Every structure is written in C-alpha cells, then in structure tokens.
Length: 105
Image (cartoon, rainbow, N blue to C red; front, side):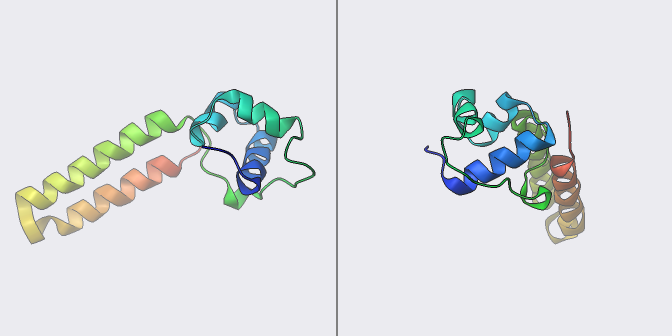
C-alpha cells in the first residue's frame, strides 16, 4: 500500500506528538522506512495533520485484539439473549471503542 499526501500529513502529526516510528508504520500497514521517508521530506512541503485528525496513540495490534474481544462479547450477548441483549451489546461496543481510542505509550 503506497502512502499518499494525506497519510504523510497524519504521519507528521503523529511524529510531532511523539509516537514511535514502528507504531506509526503499523497504523498504515507499512514498515518504518516509509515513516522515515515522510520524516525526510520525500512528500514535499506538507503540514502536519491537527491532533483531532490523528489516530489514538499506541500500537494498533493490542488495541485491535481488545476491540475484537468487545465485538465477540457483543455478538454473544445478541446470540444468547436476542433483543434482550441489545443494550448489553451496545455497551460492550461503546466500551471497546473507548478503550481503542485511549492514548497509550
């Protein structure tokens, strides 16, 4: 997957925030050399994306595994309880998304 200028802006924002190169690369499914290319100016003169446009700080792998667990729990509530499990499933998904969006180092 090739990076584009919008990706490069986000990468610059993540670098400015102090994210680790390997975490940034993981967010984009790239290796850290692509992050270094952005850092070295290979995308020209671009500005960093603002903080509100950045993904949450931290490695995406653990976040994804936890979110997957929340989705599985929500599905189980729906399968086991039917319409009675909707509120529980919604809460599972909301909690999972909140954990996913939490900044981690």
